[in-house]
Amino acid sequence: MAEKSSTLLGNTNLTEFGVQAIRGKATQVLKESNAIALSNQQFDDFMAVCKNPGKPSNKLLKAAKSFDDTGYK
Image (tube, rainbow, N blue to C red):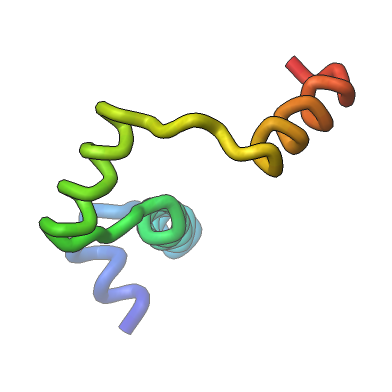
């Protein structure tokens, strides 16, 4: 089955087919793990907060200071 699939895709050998299959699957996994799916309402709510962000809470300010103190840039 793998040899026939490799031939149909124009690969010269099974190694080339294996590399192509792994790259394709890796790309798919990365896209799926980095994607965020929102409903229209969730997106609208997100955009509204981005356009009019409230005052940062003390907890957020403390977290930001803690991050700044790490020296990470």
